[in-house]
Length: 379
Ligand SMILES: NC(=O)c1ccc[n+]([C@@H]2O[C@H](COP(=O)([O-])OP(=O)(O)OC[C@H]3O[C@@H](n4cnc5c(N)ncnc54)[C@H](O)[C@@H]3O)[C@@H](O)[C@H]2O)c1
Image (cartoon, rainbow, N blue to C red; front, top):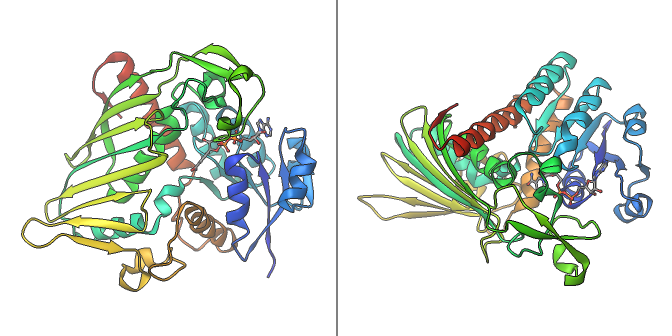
């Protein structure tokens, strides 16, 4: 079988996870990596990738490379994606697609014009039980949806000494917690319920108004390794926390709490859906189990098991019940759909494309507007 050759750009926390997920697919070869890191050659050796570039333009000129994964800090996504599209490559970009609406609109248009496969890595949808809940809702098993609420909580920015490029607007964008993790929850919620958010009302808070920036760069989640004397004071103007109210197209109501300073919650997404027939609850730290609540009979708990799931969600389960799947598997399942479609354009576009990326940028934009104006904003 002829393999699809991939270049992964930015090999920090998530770039390396992309490489691992891609290597689990039988129709893909990770051919090259690119990073600005001085140690890129060493990293290529550690990752077992033969070709490495420190010049992005050179990677794009390499005609062997069919597809590019953009895993760099947010402010680089627009330019890097645009250049890759102009070079005729398929592009999988990390979220957020860009840091503003007009740039995302431009990329959606350009990708369509170029006719290449395009995707944004909203991988949380690819927890099998999230496809299962979507199937249950689409088949009417939950009834009419009344409300959706949940949270996305982390603690890796809990201390004032925790620092990352995401804390700087110029590198991350105007919103931090909402754009970085709230966007995953909103993508998940619209995907699972099949309902669009129509109005938002947001309240942000920045608890660490001054943080201590390390004097040398660190990769995501690696800040715990530095010593206190390695820092300098920096004022912070992006949110640690947000609470957001939602109205959905069918009249359903919703709410979300996002926080990057919630001690003990490492990376926890919760989603609870109330329907007219039953309710459901799931959280990403126990992703292989979903709870269904009933009014007149016993409640139910479904352990992820392909043999008892809907065919629509069985499709993204690779292991039998009891053999747990987690975060790395979400990306394997996501990428397998993308690369299957690169091989056969007749397959459905059943993964988040640049349009889903644009949708999240629009939602974040309206949430920031609501926070500033202290009122409901229509999408
Ligand atoms: N889908 C998810 O679950 C998920 C999880 C984490 C991060 N992300 C997204 O992935 C992106 C990267 O985040 P991360 O946590 O991996 O960050 P990171 O800081 O760990 O890694 C970023 C990498 O990009 C490299 N880089 C920086 N500037 C560059 C340039 N000009 N050219 C080439 N390489 C450059 C850095 O050297 C580093 O290796 C962000 O957009 C983030 O939102 C998504």
